[in-house]
Length: 246
Image (cartoon, rainbow, N blue to C red):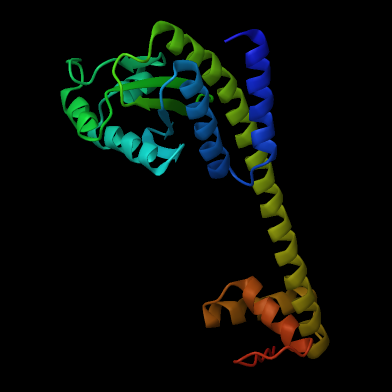
């Protein structure tokens, strides 16, 4: 993989982030792109999945296909294999031939039954609290050569940067969504309090207490009760009319 190839790959990864709506969509795109990249480099069909470990919990969170996700989950269920070892050690691990490699006998048997003869796990750097690994699968043995592994490591290093960027973007979007939701809730509550104040000729604190009691008595969220008041005053019908008195 030349420097020009790496620059082109990273540009495509950035485009992938820009064109996706959420992390799951990005990861599915990332694994699809990774599978295509490795397939082109090796010359055989490659499947790819991504596994995330966070706070000691491990899960398959994306794949180039449903089959790739299923293959990856076999390893998670068994707790052994190159992916698990790559996560633990922080270095790539390869299963060159499931029919002869003695390290993970149960896992190798399950892979062979699924039509897979070789696998490669390459860890991704995400930070102190999280770790991830890209897992590659091939039906043929011996396809993950030293050169193929080196190419995968270079690509995964770029993917790690792209994934960290995607996570930060998603976190910022979530914070923005949370802030917008909180502001909308606050606005509705303030409007409802203003209407209660006008009806009962009371202070804002007294109006808020009336609203809080109604929320508690009805076992409903404060915002939902406030929205009902605002809608009712605006003339929108409700199945249960609201009555608020001091």
